[in-house]
Image 1 (spheres, rainbow, N blue to C red):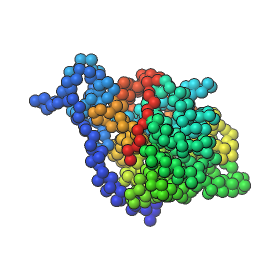
Image 2 (cartoon, rainbow, N blue to C red):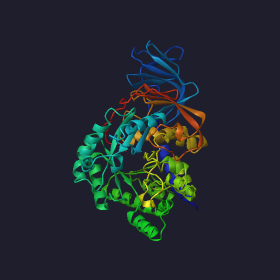
Image 3 (spheres, rainbow, N blue to C red):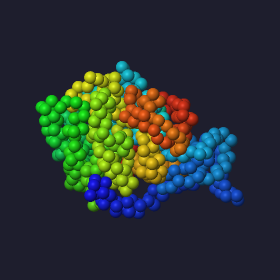
Image 4 (cartoon, rainbow, N blue to C red):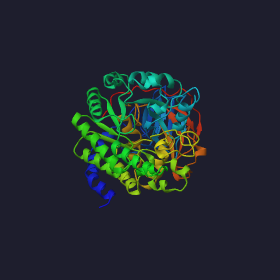
Length: 512
């Protein structure tokens, strides 16, 4: 039995379990608000403060798709119902005829770099890219590569304060922080309760790289996080295996970029995933696996979920759209564009991930955006592969890839796509006002033309990077208009937002 077959056997009952949970998603109150039906069956919004109404579109939630209008007042969804009649004379009307109306995407895994004296616009510019891609909220990590100072890296609370100070007034969409716990902090465990209370209930640790944490420390963090409502995100790769394979490759003179992938096998990811889950089980804690890339690692997550353990996992667009064939290119400059960790995998792995998304083995999709540039971090001539920056941009292409390669080709339904990109991210990461189109939620909306044809080109993108790993890919789907709390950021494909309109979000403990 092949990789996809083995995963399919394990996730078959997860599909039934996920379907059984569907009413929880359906508890969204479509049609709720101040709208009341008149004798003709139309609904009237009698509020005098309605700011905006999106009319004629197909609203897509995690539970269903339906024709409805969406009324917005004071930045919140006021009502969702067909044929709304609005009594407010100042209400702006946005015609969504022929378009999908989706909740704004939430990208929970980015490495957007902090503004610096040399590059003051980089946080702002990546937020613009997010908006163009339909993302209205993103969470950023503050690992050393993002420009955090040595002082900020040495303390979780100092790191949070520095992040807030340096990003204030920068973003055009809402954003938050997921802290990184590494070996550089003096006493991170003692700071975790205060960090969570300060609105940062998620944090990441690594099982690989120089700043990886030993298993004992991971266990302690898991226990502390669980006691205070936090959630640990873990980069799962076996450092001993990888370090040994890298040393062997270098000793043999194998220094080209393609050896990055050959020295990070799927079994190294799967073993570390198994170990992270075991540590969480011992700590009686939930755990979140970041950027899962392989069928082998997915099998560990599916097994844990089948046993009822609180394990969550994400994958990324590049693992769903690209394969390890890219490392076989004779053009070294092309290969280094795909040097990411974990690396791209086989087509069988790619198909297993889509199956995992459909069946519930995977919980959401995030970009793992790293704003590397060919002219700087990935410049030629390439150094030996361990010295090549690991990462690729993706904050602007998250929805484009998930829809274009997924929903448009039958890999996912639209409702599941919304669940993966908005509703579940909001639930797991404590964004209680986000992720759904229902009365009382933030009016973070996007109008999406699902039938539009587009070719992804770096020349058309707005992020800080100078390349995209998806260059030249043709697909269906295009973001037309994006609203952040009811105010346009993108209108008919043009940027109309404002630097600083995005807010830092103090999040609540995750609802897992």
